[in-house]
Length: 389
Ligand code: GCO
Ligand code: MN
Ligand code: MN
Image 1: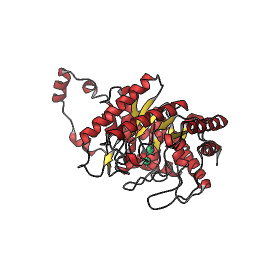
Image 2: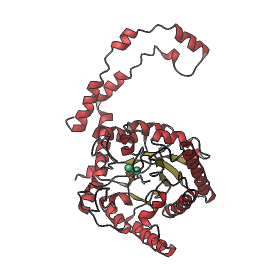
Image 3: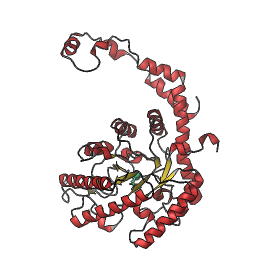
Image 4: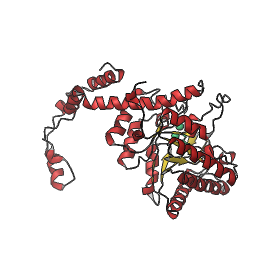
């Protein structure tokens, strides 16, 4: 593989322990790969050139570990990080695997489950912070319903808000340098999950006591499952100053949560996403929340991880070419041409401006009949992506 597409620390490419560590169990089949220890996974990731590793509390420390076991595991993990130079930018809490969370964690109807979920998150926050994490992700996999007879959606929203407010105060109380990133998903494993899209999360964040501490962690696959345009969700989050983290992977529309290698399905949407992140100067982790096909052994897992980063880097190069392409740029100038004749109507409102606008004649015929050349522009993009340009 050519050096041009060699990952470096500046891209902040990260993977979850649960991603390269996936043993390929699914609802229909048993594991196809041996479990690898967190320490070995750190070495695997360092070997393929990743920058960092993220984890759920129980990816690292089993849920029933004693505190002595916890301390030993954490110390071994720290040694592996030190040996490899890998960092932990993000941590998260597993609030979905244990049977106690079968009806949700923060939204469970059982106050004991809600309290346990809070306790588990406090410990996961401590663990993440101890290992250097600056972001804590919340993915409410079980926060939903199969039947709306079971849970009141207003109550569920209030419970989630109360939990997030409590956790923000905990972070402040402890003086942690930590922000939260909320990750939406429309369904799976629940029939329906609350706050199903990034847009819904953004609306919810504005209702919190400390909205400045909370942003989003949009995931390609999750917006695609909802049939939405991922780039548009990311752009809205960026515009709101809320793009704290991102989960990169791929997914065919209308399918189950596939979590495929980045760029494995929708090259064109992946391209516009990479171009956006690079154009705006996104500085957060580029986290791959995906896993290797179930057909793979650990060599295949390495190919998967290298492939995620390589595709990102290739698309970065394509984005730079797109921005430097004189024909594409000339078309863009044409598309966005402005003869200055509408200057008087731009900007903020005034009574005089509104009155003048009402008097203005518009040539609807010429506006409506002008061809926009988007076909040519799109084909130039396709040519560039396919390497014929
Ligand atoms: C999924 C989710 C998770 C979360 C992870 C971190 O669909 O399984 O994307 O992988 O990202 O739990 O919070
Ligand atoms: Mn996912
Ligand atoms: Mn995710």
